[in-house]
Image (cartoon, rainbow, N blue to C red):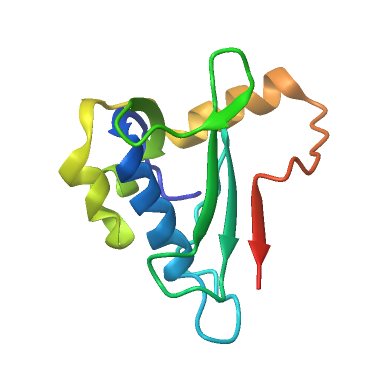
Length: 137
């Protein structure tokens, strides 16, 4: 925010989701430290990265929340419904694998409108750490 993206709905196959997270961590760490340039903020996933591994092989584990609200290992060949800002859905910040591989693309509502509704419905908001991303060195 405040980029006025729509939050778009698309389907991506598991192997593409892995590529997305590899790109996220690879462009967010140099040889020494976290630079955070393209690190995705996520929900519905649990990820473990090992930044001491070579670029493209840093994602150690990836789990996705299923319809029973439980985490399970991602299936490389299964399609998953994903919500992403329109900028990323169109391949921005080097996430070209999203644009190239997305299926059933549907433009959603403006991010600001959805966030406003969320805050109104969930206030007061009490954030908790839920171990979405774990970084190993």
